[in-house]
Structure formats: structure tokens, C-alpha cells
Image 1 (tube, rainbow, N blue to C red):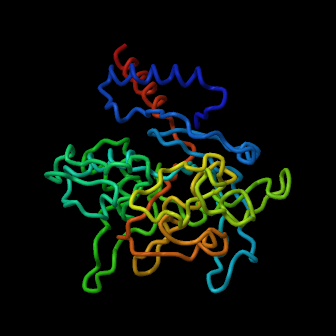
Image 2 (image 1 turned 135 degrees about the vertical axis):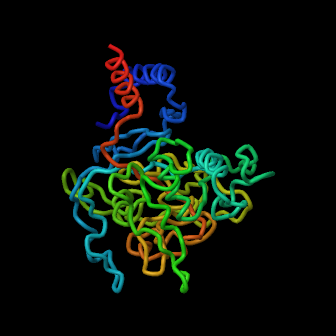
Image 3 (image 1 turned 60 degrees about the vertical axis):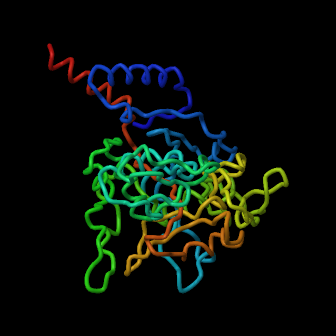
Length: 362
């Protein structure tokens, strides 16, 4: 069962208090209890009409993408030779993070991961937003570069997958918690003599968190259950609930996205455009950072979607254009996490554990 925000404020407060009590009684780590940040901007009318529900897990707010078994992207939006059968169609409900992962969220993972593995300040691990000023094995040596706290984090594909493993294992912080759960990270090795990666091509069965597939990302950004009227589904051409091209520019100047407009040193923060979102309430499908996908090619390259504030064009946001992009899995770009639905709220898990303990003590 997924706990949503609507109509459950009192219940959530009660559950959070009870979860804290459970943590104290049972020695549960604080990181295993979901922390609820300030809510993100409200859903748009289109997102409300689509029946979007929200759930927060490990401090990340997700939109639950409904309409399972939705129709695929029409052929007129698919150019040969890149036509993809079933593009955008997903058979189950799932969740997508409403915003890209930030440096502040990623820093917690960096500090948990570094003591157990040789990372040596690599850009693939830290991106451009995080640095170490000392021993790379010392978690306290890592910090966010000033002005980048709320910008989208960057990392290589493998570290995005390890981040999913860490969440899957409730942020345990032990070496094995980074190696399996969502993805089998023991396969992250080269295949001699060619040097091509051995990496798994998809998530493990039962993964609680994941990097979205091409279909999952496309549906979350473009598909609308009410595209042509109530109960008449279809796809918008751009990820802003519109067929009109995205307007690049700062929000105070009427812009809808920061795609390609940042020529400075510091990145823009996420959520610059709080009223511009997909039909499911997702932000920054245009601009921000390009985002990793789970899909891979034969030689280890991974697909990505979206456009960047530092380059590209608003033309690339069009449904027909962006699905063919791929790059080396060592490239550093952003990620929008996915979550399996239903997912048990961590507070409820604590209540269950407390009940089991009390039962054993009778």
C-alpha cells in the first residue's frame, strides 16, 4: 500500500511519531526512517486530472504514474530507423521522482560509499558538484562546492545504479548494500581483451528503486490520460503538457526552461519553473541536466533523455527527437529515480517490527 499526501496528514504525523519510537526501541538506524522534506510545488490541473498521487520515500517525492497498459507513442512521432515498438507503454504502475537528484541528496551517498571503496576523487563518482579536501576514505572530507547545493547532481551510470542499491537496502552503509538489491554491481567490470563492459542490462527482480527505462521516462514526461479530453489518452509533443515548443529563458522573462541558456560557471538550481511540469507533475524534463536511462547498447553505452542547461536546444525536447541519444556509461549526467509501486512505507515497516518484538516478548 502506498501512503499518499491527500487526506492523510494526521495519519502521517502519527506514523512518523510511532516510527521514531520504534527506531528508539529497536535500535533502527535513523537513516532507515524516511525523512519528509518540505513539499514540492503543487500539482498542475492536468496532473490532478490525470489522477496523479504522490508518495515520499527516503525524502524523495515521487509521482505515481498510473494508467497501466497505456497506448504506445504513435508512429508519426517515431522516425525511422529508430522506431521502437511499444515506446512509452508501461504495463504496471510505478513512481518517478518529481525532480532530479540534487547534490545535497547525493552527498549523503558519497559519504556512505567512500569509506568502503577506492574512489580517488573521480569525476565519475563525484560529478562537478562535490569534492574532497582530504583523505578520500574519510567521509567528512567531502563537501558540496559553494552555490551547487540545490543543483542537479551528476554521476556516471554505475554510480546511479549503486545509489539505487543503497536506497533499496535502506541506506545501511555496509559494503554489500552498494553491490546488490536493484542492480548487480559485481558485474561492473571490463570484459578482456576487448574491454567492453560486462554490466547488467536491467534491474534485478524485486528492485525497489531503479533508473527509469526509455518507456518509463517517456510515459512520465509525455503521456496524458486526458490528452484529447476526459478519458481520451495521448501524447504531448513536449514535456511541459503542450505541443508548443518549450520557451527557453529565465522564469522572470517568461521562460519555461533553462535549456541551453546557462553560459556561466554555476549551474541553476532545480525547480526554477514551479508551474511548468509534465502531465504527471514532473519538473525539468526540459533543461536542468540530461538524465540516465536503464537501456543499454551492445558495447555498454547507455541511453539518456532530456536536455541540459549548458547545451542543446529546445528542439531536442520534442518527443520525436530525444529518444535516440546514448553515451558512455562513464559520462557524468543527472538522474531521476524510479520507485516500485506498491512500496511499503518505512514507518509502517517499523510498526510491523515493533509488533513482532512485542509478540515474541509475551
